[in-house]
Image (cartoon, rainbow, N blue to C red):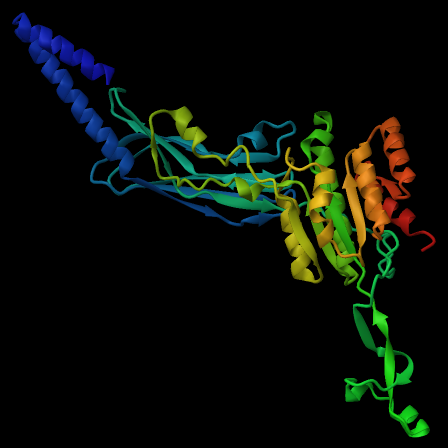
Length: 436
């Protein structure tokens, strides 16, 4: 706009002072500027792109191939295009980086009428998470550099990288009490293959419950009674509040907490028991922008800000997956664990206060904690006094800090276990089950 104002001002001066050569020069400059503006807009608007990813879910260490194809659908050749395929900035600059990129996700190219070219690169995922790949940022302009246009094309893809699941070789999968004692508050189901006794017939008993031998012997109807079929399992409480995770240990300590929950949930799942998850973490999927991606921008900085996931989420509700059994339940828990992020939302005591009514009393409560303030210990103690079977797993590296945490938990009558790394996870489970 300043170029136009300057040219018009000089043109007016030329007309006022009858400077013919200057007037013709300004006419030519304005014509070039208008044509350049028109061409730069036509070039950028007629570009399109498609994206292909060979997978949208991955394990740690897996590689995903990305192919972005750019095409010119207009009737004019495009002399130059600068392309940049967006990736999460935090994942690239973190040390060590969460992802590794091989190949070209940047490029400068030109396209003829109907021409197509591609960017090909590979991403290796080193840590769990929910990663946005794309969209593609395009920059083009006229040959004189007077006008530049920026545009975002292609919808992004989201790759879910599952957390590590450590096989618990020393885990006693025959135990009916996976982590901590389970107090059966009531009989949920009866097992018809396990007869516990005989009682007089009661109105409403099904015919298949009648004990015919006892009926024939006594001359009165009698019914069979069965042993209860207990459904134990575990509900995992994961504290993911940012304030209790020391920045010096991140992201290793939070990832270790997720690995611990995933591994224990896997063991309980293979026992055929119910598993649930409750956490105050943020779900990364909540941060997806809903504004759309096919927009123009005035500069590169604004374009880059418009392509990524939101930096924050206003969600304060806890993430709750109510207890259930089966492969679908375990898969849902693993996917949720992959997307969890630290947040400054609910504290751990607030989390328990919000969700305790939704926790099954016939399952162990396994709390995975990076630190144990007084309020957290008291909260878990209150759960125990309400009849829950509670075990606390504390992830700390410092011996003094662990001693303080353990003292607070033991004072509340809780079972405490320490987790320092993945190697000690199996050992911790083996120690927990000794004597059960």
